[in-house]
Length: 208
Image (cartoon, rainbow, N blue to C red; front, side):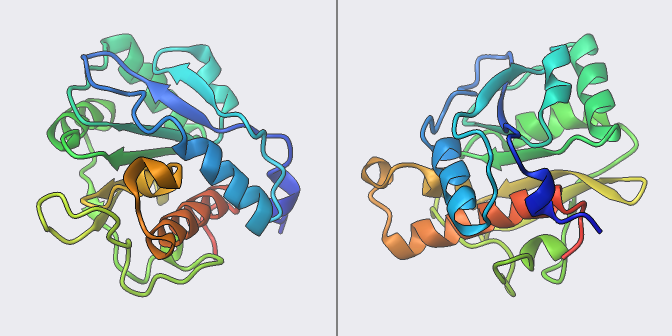
Protein backbone atom coordinates (compact mmCIF):
# COMPACT_ATOMS: atom_id res chain seq x y z
CA UNK A 1 0.00 0.00 0.00
CA UNK A 2 1.22 3.49 -0.84
CA UNK A 3 1.74 5.58 2.27
CA UNK A 4 -0.13 8.86 2.50
CA UNK A 5 3.30 10.36 3.24
CA UNK A 6 4.32 9.47 -0.29
CA UNK A 7 1.29 10.92 -2.01
CA UNK A 8 0.85 14.03 0.12
CA UNK A 9 3.81 15.72 -1.50
CA UNK A 10 3.38 19.11 -3.13
CA UNK A 11 -0.40 18.83 -3.13
CA UNK A 12 -2.65 21.72 -2.24
CA UNK A 13 -5.93 21.74 -0.38
CA UNK A 14 -8.68 24.23 -1.14
CA UNK A 15 -11.44 26.34 0.35
CA UNK A 16 -14.80 26.11 -1.44
CA UNK A 17 -16.30 29.37 -2.69
CA UNK A 18 -20.06 29.20 -3.09
CA UNK A 19 -22.96 31.53 -3.89
CA UNK A 20 -26.00 32.38 -1.80
CA UNK A 21 -24.65 35.09 0.46
CA UNK A 22 -23.05 32.92 3.13
CA UNK A 23 -19.57 33.78 4.34
CA UNK A 24 -17.61 31.03 2.60
CA UNK A 25 -14.46 33.00 3.48
CA UNK A 26 -14.87 32.64 7.27
CA UNK A 27 -11.88 31.52 9.36
CA UNK A 28 -9.17 32.80 6.98
CA UNK A 29 -6.25 31.44 9.02
CA UNK A 30 -7.67 27.98 9.67
CA UNK A 31 -6.47 26.02 6.63
CA UNK A 32 -3.03 27.61 6.71
CA UNK A 33 -2.60 26.46 10.30
CA UNK A 34 -3.98 23.00 9.54
CA UNK A 35 -1.51 22.51 6.69
CA UNK A 36 1.36 23.69 8.88
CA UNK A 37 0.30 21.28 11.63
CA UNK A 38 0.09 18.35 9.20
CA UNK A 39 3.42 19.13 7.58
CA UNK A 40 5.02 19.17 11.04
CA UNK A 41 3.22 16.26 12.68
CA UNK A 42 2.36 13.95 9.79
CA UNK A 43 5.50 14.67 7.77
CA UNK A 44 3.44 15.72 4.79
CA UNK A 45 4.81 18.29 2.39
CA UNK A 46 1.63 20.08 1.36
CA UNK A 47 1.68 23.51 -0.23
CA UNK A 48 1.64 25.93 2.73
CA UNK A 49 -0.86 28.15 0.93
CA UNK A 50 -4.40 26.89 0.37
CA UNK A 51 -6.32 27.61 -2.83
CA UNK A 52 -9.80 29.04 -3.25
CA UNK A 53 -11.97 27.21 -5.75
CA UNK A 54 -15.51 27.81 -6.98
CA UNK A 55 -18.02 24.98 -6.89
CA UNK A 56 -18.53 25.00 -10.64
CA UNK A 57 -14.88 25.34 -11.66
CA UNK A 58 -12.92 22.67 -13.48
CA UNK A 59 -10.09 23.50 -11.08
CA UNK A 60 -12.05 21.68 -8.37
CA UNK A 61 -10.60 18.42 -9.66
CA UNK A 62 -7.06 19.61 -8.88
CA UNK A 63 -7.57 19.35 -5.13
CA UNK A 64 -7.90 16.06 -3.22
CA UNK A 65 -9.36 17.79 -0.15
CA UNK A 66 -11.82 20.70 -0.23
CA UNK A 67 -13.07 22.49 2.87
CA UNK A 68 -16.39 24.32 3.11
CA UNK A 69 -17.47 26.56 5.97
CA UNK A 70 -19.65 29.54 6.84
CA UNK A 71 -22.56 30.76 8.91
CA UNK A 72 -25.27 31.40 6.32
CA UNK A 73 -26.96 30.60 3.04
CA UNK A 74 -25.52 28.29 0.40
CA UNK A 75 -26.86 27.94 -3.14
CA UNK A 76 -25.56 25.56 -5.81
CA UNK A 77 -26.70 26.03 -9.41
CA UNK A 78 -27.59 23.03 -11.57
CA UNK A 79 -24.18 23.07 -13.23
CA UNK A 80 -22.44 23.40 -9.87
CA UNK A 81 -24.38 20.44 -8.51
CA UNK A 82 -23.19 18.32 -11.42
CA UNK A 83 -19.60 19.50 -11.11
CA UNK A 84 -19.45 18.82 -7.38
CA UNK A 85 -21.04 15.40 -7.78
CA UNK A 86 -18.60 14.49 -10.57
CA UNK A 87 -15.70 15.65 -8.39
CA UNK A 88 -16.81 13.61 -5.39
CA UNK A 89 -17.63 10.39 -7.20
CA UNK A 90 -14.33 10.56 -9.11
CA UNK A 91 -12.27 10.53 -5.92
CA UNK A 92 -12.55 14.00 -4.41
CA UNK A 93 -13.40 14.70 -0.78
CA UNK A 94 -15.44 17.50 0.80
CA UNK A 95 -15.25 18.51 4.44
CA UNK A 96 -18.15 20.72 5.53
CA UNK A 97 -17.60 22.46 8.85
CA UNK A 98 -20.65 24.10 10.41
CA UNK A 99 -19.45 27.47 11.65
CA UNK A 100 -22.86 27.90 13.31
CA UNK A 101 -25.71 28.58 10.93
CA UNK A 102 -24.85 26.68 7.76
CA UNK A 103 -26.58 23.43 8.72
CA UNK A 104 -29.96 23.69 6.96
CA UNK A 105 -28.42 25.24 3.87
CA UNK A 106 -25.58 22.75 3.51
CA UNK A 107 -27.93 19.81 3.98
CA UNK A 108 -30.38 21.21 1.43
CA UNK A 109 -27.72 21.77 -1.23
CA UNK A 110 -25.92 18.47 -0.68
CA UNK A 111 -29.27 16.72 -1.15
CA UNK A 112 -29.24 18.19 -4.66
CA UNK A 113 -25.78 16.74 -5.20
CA UNK A 114 -26.69 13.28 -3.88
CA UNK A 115 -30.50 12.98 -3.89
CA UNK A 116 -30.16 9.25 -3.32
CA UNK A 117 -28.11 9.67 -0.15
CA UNK A 118 -28.71 10.96 3.37
CA UNK A 119 -26.15 12.17 5.88
CA UNK A 120 -25.59 9.42 8.42
CA UNK A 121 -23.93 9.89 11.79
CA UNK A 122 -20.65 8.01 11.73
CA UNK A 123 -20.04 5.65 14.66
CA UNK A 124 -17.19 6.46 17.02
CA UNK A 125 -15.41 3.37 15.68
CA UNK A 126 -15.21 4.86 12.18
CA UNK A 127 -11.58 5.04 10.93
CA UNK A 128 -11.67 8.82 10.54
CA UNK A 129 -11.54 9.07 14.34
CA UNK A 130 -8.64 6.63 14.62
CA UNK A 131 -5.85 7.79 12.37
CA UNK A 132 -2.64 9.08 14.00
CA UNK A 133 -4.78 10.61 16.73
CA UNK A 134 -7.37 8.61 18.60
CA UNK A 135 -10.78 10.11 19.33
CA UNK A 136 -12.72 7.28 21.01
CA UNK A 137 -15.71 9.56 21.63
CA UNK A 138 -15.87 11.03 18.14
CA UNK A 139 -15.47 14.70 17.32
CA UNK A 140 -14.05 16.98 19.99
CA UNK A 141 -16.26 19.83 21.12
CA UNK A 142 -14.47 23.06 20.19
CA UNK A 143 -17.17 25.73 20.59
CA UNK A 144 -20.41 25.43 22.51
CA UNK A 145 -22.95 27.28 20.34
CA UNK A 146 -26.25 25.63 21.40
CA UNK A 147 -24.66 23.25 23.87
CA UNK A 148 -25.41 20.22 21.69
CA UNK A 149 -22.89 17.40 21.38
CA UNK A 150 -20.48 17.50 18.47
CA UNK A 151 -21.52 15.11 15.70
CA UNK A 152 -19.79 13.80 12.61
CA UNK A 153 -21.98 12.96 9.63
CA UNK A 154 -21.03 11.42 6.33
CA UNK A 155 -22.26 10.86 2.81
CA UNK A 156 -21.15 7.42 1.68
CA UNK A 157 -21.24 6.75 -2.05
CA UNK A 158 -20.68 3.18 -3.21
CA UNK A 159 -18.90 2.34 0.02
CA UNK A 160 -16.64 5.42 0.08
CA UNK A 161 -16.96 8.42 2.37
CA UNK A 162 -17.11 11.36 -0.03
CA UNK A 163 -18.23 14.08 2.38
CA UNK A 164 -17.61 14.51 6.09
CA UNK A 165 -19.77 17.03 7.92
CA UNK A 166 -18.67 18.27 11.34
CA UNK A 167 -21.67 19.67 13.19
CA UNK A 168 -21.86 21.53 16.52
CA UNK A 169 -18.10 21.22 16.72
CA UNK A 170 -16.51 24.12 14.79
CA UNK A 171 -13.17 22.56 13.97
CA UNK A 172 -12.25 25.53 11.79
CA UNK A 173 -12.47 27.94 14.71
CA UNK A 174 -10.05 25.73 16.59
CA UNK A 175 -7.64 25.78 13.65
CA UNK A 176 -7.52 29.57 13.55
CA UNK A 177 -4.77 31.70 15.07
CA UNK A 178 -4.93 31.56 18.84
CA UNK A 179 -5.68 35.26 19.23
CA UNK A 180 -8.83 35.02 17.09
CA UNK A 181 -11.01 32.95 19.43
CA UNK A 182 -8.77 32.82 22.51
CA UNK A 183 -9.15 29.02 22.70
CA UNK A 184 -6.91 27.15 25.10
CA UNK A 185 -3.90 25.33 23.70
CA UNK A 186 -5.56 22.05 24.65
CA UNK A 187 -8.69 22.91 22.65
CA UNK A 188 -6.70 24.08 19.63
CA UNK A 189 -4.58 20.94 19.73
CA UNK A 190 -7.64 18.70 19.74
CA UNK A 191 -9.07 20.58 16.76
CA UNK A 192 -5.81 20.38 14.82
CA UNK A 193 -5.37 16.71 15.64
CA UNK A 194 -8.85 15.93 14.35
CA UNK A 195 -8.11 17.97 11.24
CA UNK A 196 -4.91 15.99 10.74
CA UNK A 197 -6.97 12.81 10.99
CA UNK A 198 -9.18 14.08 8.16
CA UNK A 199 -6.17 14.79 5.98
CA UNK A 200 -4.56 11.43 6.74
CA UNK A 201 -7.82 9.59 6.14
CA UNK A 202 -8.24 11.19 2.71
CA UNK A 203 -4.64 10.61 1.63
CA UNK A 204 -4.66 7.03 2.90
CA UNK A 205 -7.82 6.20 0.99
CA UNK A 206 -10.01 5.60 3.99
CA UNK A 207 -7.96 3.15 6.01
CA UNK A 208 -6.32 3.49 9.41
